[in-house]
Length: 175
Image 1 (cartoon, rainbow, N blue to C red):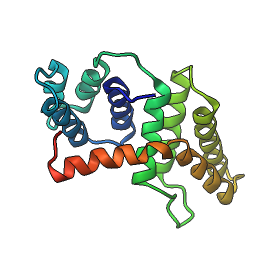
Image 2: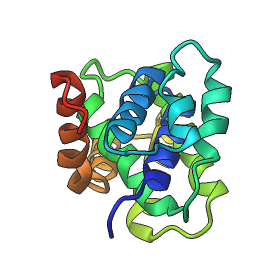
Image 3: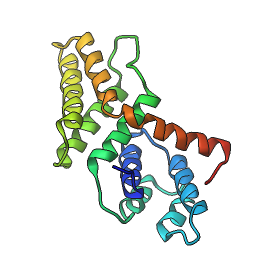
Image 4: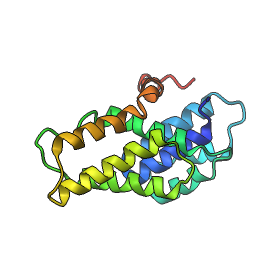
């Protein structure tokens, strides 16, 4: 399935809420869309100047991007972003507050979106349950690391897509 602006907007929306994406990334994406269009949509123009806006205002604009939502693709993009940003758990063996926030945030996302395959829903639920067990004193770090690897694998096929977008943004290529 091809990725649409709606899929990417939903990914950025969830990513902003979970702290995996920044408003600068939203701006770069919007600028690329504007550069590729003779008549860019109003929402793209608004997102292109969002760095100083409140994150919830940016999320509201991202949710207004027209098109058919595909939570599966948006979550796979999010997991690909996670694979780039944090390819492994921190090696010190501790569960950090950011790890728990990520696990609980991802779990809330799958609870809010009903139509997800087990290939996406399962690794997220496993990661959440494994980290919860460790925090409760009954978990195993090796099992958590395996569930984290499975979580990242669910989005790995989209890593090259995100890296290509990031390299275009860094090189100044807006096409």
